[in-house]
Amino acid sequence: ELQLVESGGGLVQPGGSLRLSCTVSGFTFNTYWMSWVRQAPGKGLEWVAKINEDGSVKGYVDSVKGRFTISRDNGDNSLYLQMNSLRAEDTAVYYCVRDGGNGHHWAFDIWGQGTMVTVSP
Amino acid sequence: DIVMTQSPLSLPVTLGQPASISCRSSQSLVYSDGNTYLNWFQQRPGQSPRRLIYKVSDRDSGVPERFSGSGSATDFTLKISRVEAEDVGVYYCMQGPHWPVTFGQGTKLEIK
Image 1 (cartoon, each protein chain N blue to C red):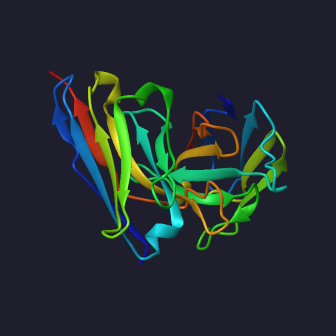
Image 2: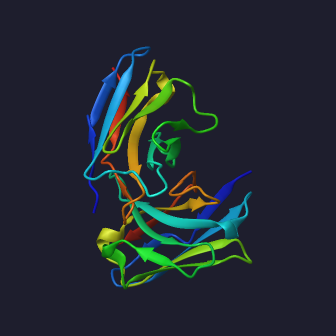
């Protein structure tokens, strides 16, 4: 079964750090781009970051550049998002998403259940 | 950034009646490989988004046939032929070819 399971969310103070993890199963992880997408409470979807199959190419939405770092461990079938200098506006559910691969661009076909990040004093 | 504009933002529908959601992009979504990369997602209350349609009109496995996608270049439509109770939720379109990936604002479908 295709599955993405996020963890690592929680309550953090402004300026603090958090590391999100996503464990993948059911497909060949190292043949897919992966993304993080977030959703603030009651709001729409916002793409945050993406990484290519071997981790050599990374991209970020402008609002998190310099603060967030996406990475992956293909040996452990895991995706990560290191979030530093967190702000109140980073409060959201963060989803791990299978992006594209094997000729399928921007698939966004598999989503995790999400992990909640709350930035508050 | 590419702006994805959905309408309507709220869609009350009677059970068994059709529904239609429009999505317009600020630039063409035709990629260099000739494909048009426009996805549709459904997010039921309390759930993660689920992809329904990819590349404008290809329906995902397990998605009921009452869902269909159409359109080209900058104008796209998601249609539900006969709305059922399980279709309640928010629907999003998404474009891929232009960096960064962007989503529409979402259309909330409810039963009248």
